[in-house]
Amino acid sequence: MQDERTHWLEMLMTTHGSAILRFCALQLKDVKLAEDAAQEVFLKAWKARDGFQGRSSERTWLYRIAINTCRDYQRTGWFRWVDRRITPEDLLHRGQEECRFDSLPVTQAVQTLPPKWRTAVYLRYCEGMKLADVASLQGVSQATVKRRLAKAAAMLREKLKGWYDE
Image 1 (cartoon, one colour):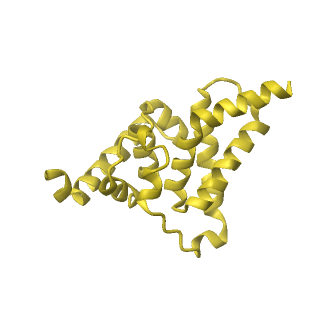
Image 2: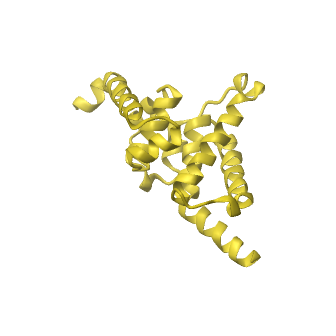
């Protein structure tokens, strides 16, 4: 039983570890804090394995845990007072091959989006999730996700005006 659980956790960490870490870094804007949060995500998954009912994919389940873990970190009082400057290079060098917006100007622009929009953009375009999965993870309708993506696209178009014309 223990070997099976260990193998399962290792498989999850190998398959989704860098993506969860990147997601946490994008949400928390602090690489060290993101590493702690990613570890906590997998610890929570380990503890809740028996409660996983298979109504979603393991990937979607992990992202739900990651979203909640990052929110918990952001709710702490000291989080608002700590300087959390993450360089876009930190995000790019962690699993760069998996991310579709691996350009420095685009990553910087995505980091400036409001959290709900940033999450939707990341999950849809960097992780390639379907609209239904993004909506489920964010606890909103698909129409809301579409609106968030459209507003984020407009904001990114404005921020990257000179960059993408070249």
